[in-house]
Length: 200
Image (cartoon, rainbow, N blue to C red; front, side, top):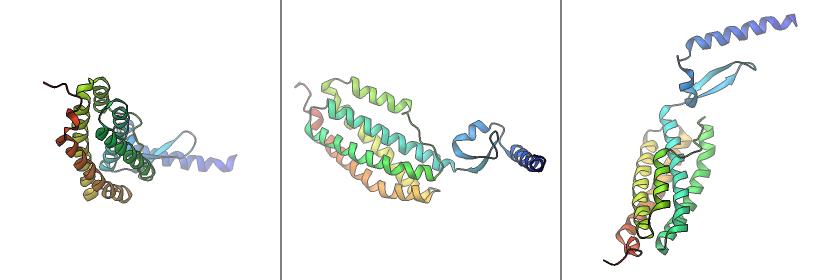
């Protein structure tokens, strides 16, 4: 037991030296740093993750989650086959994108959100409560805005991101999302969102 005492002292000294360099509010840094255990009771920040990487993972994850849930609602509520076809394509594509993003986020040391934020939650509620006449209009409008925002996110990270794996993901997904945007704009220009409207 006496031989282990110097090791404990050394570990304690190392922990104190890291603590002295840590931010005043370490809890606020928890999402953008990985922690390594020195012993059963002490952890230290070993590597900080770029804030832009965290932002990208968070927004891309939420986008996929929203798209999947919105597509499920559209498949259930829309009465227009072209809208249902688009929704099925979104369900398939964003489920695949979500699956591809998970290991890349883990490799980048970023914990993905598990719940939608208030904005996306509100949008889904609008879809759930929209009248039959207004549903397709609302869904198409939301999809247009969502894909414009996601395309901008992907292009920016593809050009400026600080993680090679996630940059590759962004570069791969950008043309896919751009194609989705083209499709939903074509839906908006078609009579699809007018099918369920009452004649004036």
